[in-house]
Length: 285
Image (cartoon, rainbow, N blue to C red):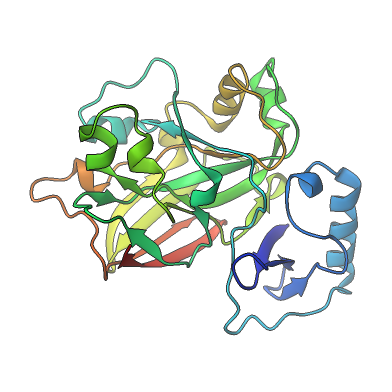
């Protein structure tokens, strides 16, 4: 299934994109798409049955904003330097263990919402990423198979980053990762049954129409299953939590001087095979 949330920010309603590409209203069946729904197999089965029957009301998609596909996200866990080619372009050694950092849940916005360039920023960067959405509690997962069984589905994430804040201003990466609007998510949550191999997905990102990133999850140093297993050894993952699993080569930081960092007025577009496409116009904060 392709689950999404549509409507004004803060007042989104749950919806479903059916096999014919028709937008269907789920608000009469479930209150929202969140961890509670994703952990409820019976409720998800009801949604599947209603979608198959064609009985769900049709929504007019024209002019309708698409919000983040998951509401009330508990935490956004991010994995750094998780692609061989990205580590190489930044001059970093491939990590022996996954690099973990966090984004606050309030950085998450819709896939086509405006991204704000922070005040004083000169190094705002792009990163297309595969997001994993948790559907079952993962606590000390004993194997990669057990970890993967905790995944509800997948989505496109844009891990926007401010490199000066992240690297040159002292402390951890948090200052360069948690600026407002720095985590567009969606358009859809695609349930795990529709993604048989998360290590076989192409990722692309364009800036002002120029292709900047063109990678594949096959290049990940740590697979999706291993990332979920590993993270669960250090923290409990709950339904509705999100993991951003890293970005392939092609970010501005890895390019020759003068590095083409983002500015107000730029347009970023990104997509992952089968998971949809995002488009953001950048403005000044």
